[in-house]
Image 1 (cartoon, rainbow, N blue to C red):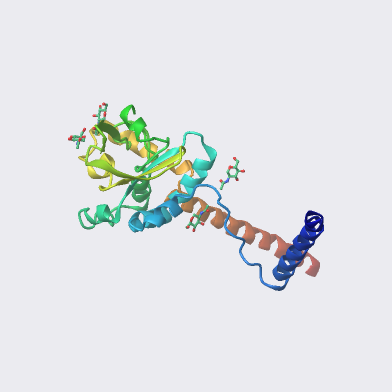
Image 2: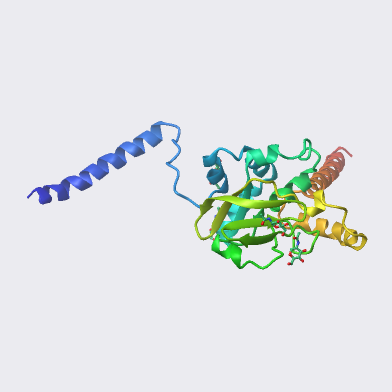
Length: 249
Ligand SMILES: *[C@@H]1O[C@H](CO)[C@@H](O)[C@H](O)[C@H]1NC(C)=O
Ligand SMILES: *[C@@H]1O[C@H](CO)[C@@H](O)[C@H](O)[C@H]1NC(C)=O
Ligand SMILES: *[C@@H]1O[C@H](CO)[C@@H](O)[C@H](O)[C@H]1NC(C)=O
Ligand SMILES: *[C@@H]1O[C@H](CO)[C@@H](O)[C@H](O)[C@H]1NC(C)=O
C-alpha cells in the first residue's frame, strides 16, 4: 500500500515542483540554468590550475580557445595543446611578447597546438616534423619535433628545446601538457629564413587569413563593406530626393 500511495503522490510532487519552478521563472528575471557538463572547454581546463594566466590571456586575445573548442567538437583527430606556464613566459627575454604583432601572437599560440590527439605513449612513435595549427611541416612554417628518451618527452622548435613536464588533461580527444618553456618558432625567433623561403611566406600569410583566423585583413574587409554601405545609402538618398522633387515640379 505505501507503493500505491507513492504511485499517486509522486506525480503530485512532480507537479508541485514543476509548478513552483514555472512560477519562479515567470516572476523572476530568468535565473541561469545550471551549467551542463557540456563540450570540452580548454579555458576551463587551464583556469583550474591557476598557473596559465598569460596563456589564457593570449587565448582570449587571439580567440583561439573558441577555435580549439569548436574544432574539438567537429573533428575526430582530436588535439594536443602544449601549455607554457606563467613562469615559462616570465623567463622570456623582456619585451619579446610585446614586440610581436597581433598576427604573430595568433601564430605563436597556434604553434603550441597540434591538430591531433597525442597520448604520452604516442610521443614515442610520432613522425617528425610534426604539423602545428600554425602551418605545415616545412622548416619555416611552424613545425615541431618530438623525441623521447625514456619517459622524457623532448620538444624541439629549432630555437628552443622544451620537455613535457606534466599531463594536465587527457581524455582521448584532447590532451593538454604542461611545458616549462615557451615554444619559440623559427619564423619569429630563429635566424632569418634562407632567401627562397621568404617569397612564398607572403602567400602563406594571405591564405591563412582565409581559414577562420581573425586577422587585420578581416577588419579591412568589414571596413570596406561599411564604406560601400555608406555609398549605397547616399545613392538611395539621392534617388529619394529626386523622387520627392518630382512632386514639386
Ligand atoms: C569555457 O569556459 C570559460 C570559463 O570557465 C567560459 O567563460 C566560456 O564561456 C566557456 N566556453 C564554452 C564554449 O562553454
Ligand atoms: C558541436 O557539433 C555538433 C554536431 O556536429 C553541432 O550541432 C554543435 O553546434 C557543435 N557545438 C559547438 C559548440 O561547436
Ligand atoms: C632534445 O632535443 C634536442 C634536439 O633534438 C637535443 O639537442 C637535446 O639534447 C634534447 N634534450 C633532451 C633533454 O633530450
Ligand atoms: C626535425 O626533424 C626533421 C626530420 O628528422 C629534421 O630534418 C629537422 O632538421 C628537425 N628539426 C628540428 C628543429 O629539430
